[in-house]
Image (cartoon, rainbow, N blue to C red; front, top):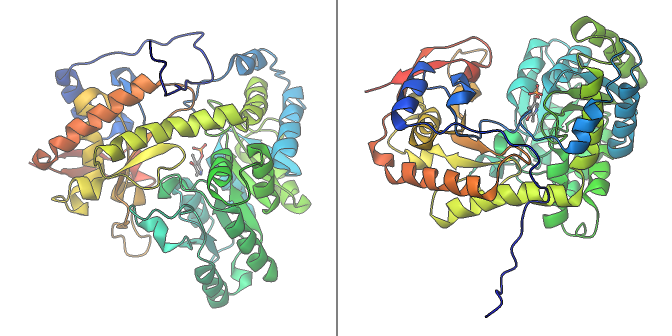
Length: 462
Ligand SMILES: *Cc1c(COP(=O)(O)O)cnc(C)c1O
């Protein structure tokens, strides 16, 4: 017998409990997607076979985290789990003061209310839906300062989350530093396709903002994933641990909002963490109005315990290698078959380029929304639109924002699916791709006022 040359690799965990998923027929799915107004957010999860809607709150917790849930101290005030969470945030991220919140957007709400005044401008490396909305609701305007490469799905720049320093400096000079409460820096930029920012670039942003005395608020939702890319791609970091790189990133910023439902491997939770005592005191006061007392912030004690443990697990090398490796596996398969996706493959999902796949549809026919619906119809895989629907309308003109990126996001939950699931997904995408010319667009028949992508309804255009 010849021994195989290839040494296989497998997920660094084994299955202890299973959750059966339903297999549906095409007829079932036709009915389900039409009842859902061709919006995958409005499908019932029971009608979904492989759920790649989001990586938010969909991770599988470890046995250790579940054990932690049993150690929940449900005291109204001063729960011991709060202090464990505070220790984890200080140890792994280095921020001094912690205010727990029920999820990321609640932390964005607090920081926006505290720091932004009417007429302020908040530069950031690409917008995120909830982040920008909270900035706007607080009277501010978001200004995109990400490098141009980030808007080009084919550009292979290794750090498409980088800030264009010239754009940032021009903006500071135009509006004046007093109109800039902070610069908003995301790691593993979600809307760009999960693209990392380099440490070199972040250091330069730090130097520039220090000159003008402007703080940096870090959207650290996927900081460990960003750190892994730095280890793999940025010269000088190959031998550093992911945990050390995470600390280095956090140390270059003044505070952070966190959706722990992503990197930190919990089903619910988030926080605001800052180094400034005054900002902390205001946040600790405001959180009582919107979330709950400052030692639970809308969470149960057990949720905070699971989060503290999840933070620790999120920076473990085996975990993060497998996590990004699985996303890469799916992406490489699709690239190998010539299917247009955002390159390089990012942290938390594979982003299909709907403009390229459905060139016969204009953005007014919602190509990404259409593609996501078609994908569901083919095999019951649920994806998400990240294009003109997600981009919303211009607050002044009321016109659609037409983003360059018109994408369908296949988002991979952490530790949930196997390589075989990834094969099924890849084959379904290939099938839809093969029949792409027959696909017609959608009309929007219901449009909610805020974050319309969640609840908008559509019908077939033909
Ligand atoms: C998910 C997410 C948020 C919002 O967090 P929620 O927990 O969903 O409220 C903010 N920023 C980024 C980059 C995210 O991915």
